[in-house]
Each structure stands twice: as C-alpha cells, then as structure tokens.
Amino acid sequence: MLDLRWIRENVEYVRRKMAERGVDVGLDEFLEKDALRRSLLQEVEALKHRRNELTRQIGRLKQTGQDPTDLLQENQRISARIEELDARVAELDAWVEAWLLRVPNIPHESVPVGPDASHNIEVRRWGEIPSFAFPVRDHVDLGRFLGILDLERAAKIAAARFPLFKGRGARLVRALAQFMLDLHIREHGYQEVWVPYLVNRTTMTGTGQLPKFEADLYAVPSDDLFLIPTAEVPVTNLFREETLSESELPIRLVCWSPCFRREAGAYGQESKGLIRQHQFDKVELVHITTPERSYDDLEVLTHHAEAVLQRLGIPYRVMLLCTGDMGFAAAKTYDIEAWLPSQQRWLEVSSCSNCGDFQARRMGLRYRPAGGGKARYAHTLNGSGLAIGRTIVVLLENYQQADGSVLIPPALRPYLDGLEYLTPGA
Image (cartoon, rainbow, N blue to C red; front, side, top):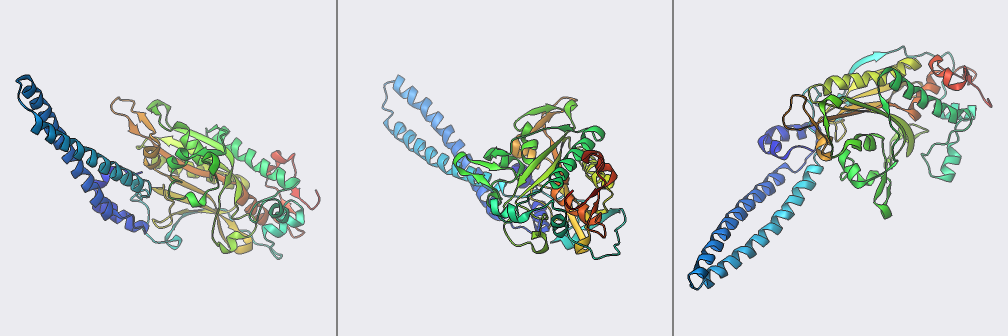
C-alpha cells in the first residue's frame, strides 16, 4: 500500500499517477474523510486535555470541602463526547485502511503512459521466428496426436480449462520444472523453497490479492483459506512482519508450484487449450532487496527468466508494460512473450515486476540498514521463470515437425533420458 502521509503531501502527483493508470480511486472522498478524521482527533485531544484539568479541579474542590457537582457533570458530558468521537474516528480509521488497500501502486517514472497493451513498448527480441514448409498445427492438435494431452477427461473429472497430461506429457511438465529450477539454483543463485498451496487472508492481503481481487480467487470458506494464484503470494510473505538485516539482502527465492485462478470472463483465442487455465504449474522467482538496487534487480530477474527461453531456443520479445496494462501491485513490469506459430502472434510466458515497497508496507517487511538508523521497508520483486503450461505450448508449436513429431531442445533432453523427439504412442 501507499504511505498515508506521503499521499497527503503529494496529492496532485497521486492524482496524476492514478489517472495514468486509468483508475479512479476516489481521492477527493479520501481527502475529505481523512481531514474529518484528523479534525476529530484534534477535538478528542482538546477534550481529553480539558477532562484532565477538570479532574485536577474536582480533586482540589473535594479537598477543600467544596461542591464539585457542576464540574462532575461537565466531566461526564466530555467523557460521553470523547466516547462518541472515538467511535466515529474508529469508523473513519477502518474506511481509510480499506481505501488504502484498494489503491494500486504508483507507476515508476520510466513506465510509458497509455491505457492498454497497444501502448506497451518492445525493449528487445531474441531468436529467429521459425518458418514451416507444412501446415502448422496448434498445441492442442499436437498434444492429441502425440497422446500427451487429454483435455476432455480433464473436463470430465474437474471442469473446462483444467489440464491433464499423460505419459511423456506428464514427464515433460516435470522435466521443464526441474530444468528451470536447476538453471535458477545452480547458475542464478536462487534458494529453492516448497510452500503451502493454501494460504490465509492476511497472506493474500500482503501481496495485494485481497481485498480487491477476492472474486478471482478459489477459496475454502469454512477455513478462510485460499488456493494460491501464484507462488509469489506465499514466497514473498515468508518474511512478513519481520525486520531483516541489510547484510541478508538481496534474498532470491525460487519455487515450483501449481497456481489456481478462476479466470472469469471470455478471452477469445487464449481460452483454447493450455493458454489460459484454471490450474497450471509455474516456476516463480522472488527477490527481496533494498530500494537502491531494486530497479537494477528487476533487470537481473528479467534476464534470468529470459535465460530459460534462450536455453530452449524459443524466440521471444520483452515488452515494457504501460501504466494502463500493469498489475495492481507493480511499479514497473516487463512481460516476456514467446512466439506462437499457430496464431502468428506473441504469447506471454512470464511477467517480471518490481513492486517497490508497496507489498512490504502491507506485510510489515523491513530491513535494518547496515550503517544503522531506522528500519526501512524492503522492496519486493517477482517474475515467472517460467509458466510451464505456456512454455509447453510454445515448445510444441515451435519445434513441431512435418510428421507431427516434436523435436526436444538439447537443453531439455537430459531431463527426458536423452529423448530427442516426442512421437505418437512413445
């Protein structure tokens, strides 16, 4: 969340930045209620000061045998008024807190201004877009032909838009996860964690999923728990309400987990096959660092995610998202989009964001500077390294052969016992 005092001191800047995001957060209503709250607090303080004076006067009157009735009656009226004001202040406190939790992060100054994805900026590309001398199949047709994907049975046992991999398809999921984990742990210096897939309301609030996006989450109401939409949620919250030492930073964590999202609404082509699912696996990268280095770390994290596609030999581009296309908690985001031959377009396989101190304030995550002084809020970053289902989509389509088989990239073969091709029935 944003700092309350900072909002008061930078009202017009906040107004401009929210307009750049294309959201109306009700800033004027907040200012009105916040001003009323502070006015009531001042009145309470004045009344408490008067009550203290009355208490002393009443004591003196009693000591001298004088009648303190009038002062006692005034004291009672003041106490009743203080109780009334305290209740009103508590209501306003709750309103302000709820308002703060629904205000998105401030976009970094380097983020392009625009209302939607058409205003995103391409930063770089890698790899050559493949050309095919035969009709291109999409990943659903390839998966069925190879016998590795069964979406019909997935729908039978769950619902539409759930995955079911079989045989070498299931092994492919595991192989990709292991390959990504090994790359990030051995070469990029991450520590692996394995986390709960159900988390509590406080955890969801800490990273910004609650209260704004509760309708998008799968919940277990009887226990007030939620299935994680991404491992970012439990991994970032590992240090909630802690004060770290600067010497511990940066912390880099990697986690392979399933992700669960209601994904309500129509998404056109993205609803087909594995592209937009209610359940999918993802390898998540999380950084916890200092404000001074967080934007450098965003570049590092993004390159770590790109390295997966480079090792697999899949062409991609990196997009800097505009203000209107960024996520709620992000201050700056790069999307990594891999080439999707069947649709002749780019498909997001990773989103890498710097959230600044936005999540840390919600979580109470601080660090103690090495030079001493007051504890500061840490900066948190996260990114997919990568989404496994979508990686399978682009792998199948980019490496498909004329006979329907799929070439396995050399970097992945050690995780599949040296297998070079996926073929039907194999």
